[in-house]
Length: 80
Length: 458
Image (tube, rainbow over all chains, first blue to last red; front, side):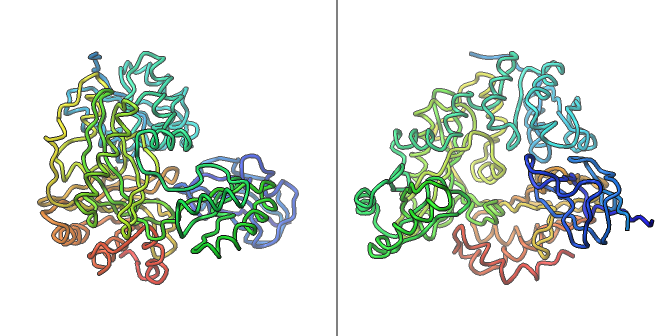
């Protein structure tokens, strides 16, 4: 099966959940569709959604919740 | 009581950390700069005598971590802590922890921070000091009879707000008694449905409000004011452009406004630098207390430019137990000052944050120009904190000359490598309404609706 990494569109802090007390947007093994929100990037105190750019199933997360990330850094791997 | 301070610990980052280091050095103090892992290469770190790592990039684990900051301050051998603005500057628990560790907190007492930080107790303090507040119910209104009594007192228009609401939900504006009688039951029903609580409160609606604020300095005994600033040009409640003095304020109103700020600060024996914020209604010439900020503010330089005092240096002196070095009659204002906040944001793309590396930098100079910044050539602006890159401040003999000087200075300012809000400020400085000081707190967002797309940087 082919895989594809979803990359961070921005530098900042990666969040897997919409708020600290909420459930994660997606878990490993979840199916995603192109355009689904899979996380947030906080950059300079503003929050931006990260969208899946392909259909697939989440194989693994590469970036942890609240991890600082660079633009272009892989956040997770999809099985497509 | 004089307290010996030899080393100052700076519990902040960015341009304000640089500003504090400069003031401390002029006082002959040694400086210790706290920094997160992401700020190891910051200008403040380079300028300070010593730098101390206080944690990972995330502010909640570094600059907002009370225990880590206090422990680092103690370990560094510092005897005083300057909190800057934002982060822990208005956190009473932090001020307490600093004092409990035997260090001097450069700011007000924890009690003063707590009192002014709470909306209800701050309002009570303002009312007790005779400071005008927005007329209204000052609490929940339960019955239509009670509500009618309130609006007889306030006049129209009035705002009807849900007690349990927030973020603009459940707010209605009534322009007449008829409208009020119609909207009141609706508002109550909506509040009950949305929040499970039909409680309402009523406040006079100031339709065209300007934001004015008075700078004060207190030493725990005496208080003086340094006149007012106007900060009406705001986007999403964030100040974008500030001035001193407020161009449209009649002299008699200015005197009453500044005196009311002194009255409030004196009533609480205020210590340190503080700002009392007001809404000003130009049509009625009435001003109303909004809140008091118990710290140095971002826009303090415009006040320094028109009065000639160094407010940051004075607040450090006060924290060392010195009395105020100036009487009210010593403080005179001259000319006009403007400040433009230069942010790493792209105004043409919805003010999208734009962190990045500064590949070229030209800082404006000349008479009456000041640029308070965290930038140097080759610096990489981290994405983890706010987008303020610097504040371009100009002074001139009058407002019109200051606007011309600001245009000249903005054209000299060149920040290569990322998008900034410079085009917004160039457009504002040339705008006929801005030049005529015809604006209120709603002005900028409406103005941006049809101009933002044209504010492309470079």
